Image (cartoon, rainbow, N blue to C red):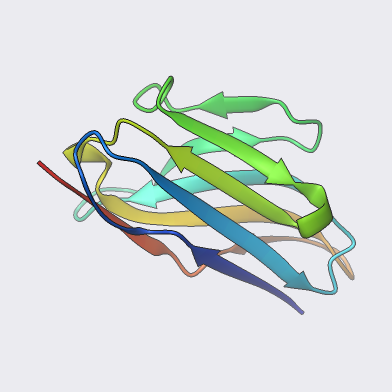
Length: 118
């Protein structure tokens, strides 16, 4: 059994920063791809940032230069540092991990709300 726990969301003014964390626990052998997605009200879920097992990253155009994804393999944790936040970044943010446990599975975090006020 694998569990993902997200933390770090909240309310921030435009121009501010937040750092999201997502930690995997349980019978985790290793984690391959890690990613953050977000879903705003009335919109489809979209990928925000992705990091491979080798550390290669890619970002949605809307967050390039403002968000940074990183990982700590020893802690089975992925982070999303969000700077220069804009009201349009308001959404529920979800982590998504490809976990090698008893088998290989894709897991979602519970979601954390990020609200950016203007």
